[in-house]
Image 1 (cartoon, one colour):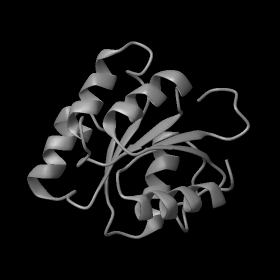
Image 2 (cartoon, helix red, strand yellow):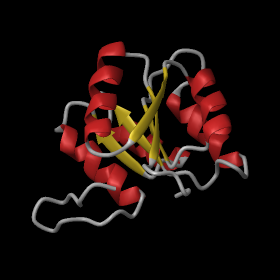
Image 3 (cartoon, helix red, strand yellow):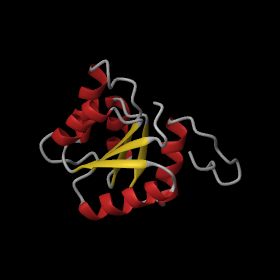
Length: 138
């Protein structure tokens, strides 16, 4: 993680409602969030902003999430950034494909928002409360 006041999350998703809700939720829990609505813009922002973690939908226009994470893993500046697959299709072979492509975690959009928060905190190695699985503000 960098020396920012708050960890920066890059959220890449083409569903405006999901982006708004997810970004607000993460911001309420102490993260700064920058968003992109497709894979190409997501890649540009990842290279420009070097976020602490990337939350990435798998089904994106232009460059899909699997292709984007493979690309991120090949570049030295982005290879170590944790990437979380965040998809409505994060089950079975889709989840296996995500793990194979290089994601650090897989979270379904159909789950509870706390599931995503827990994974973001885990991949960033932020303190965790054993009772709830969440830590204090970052």
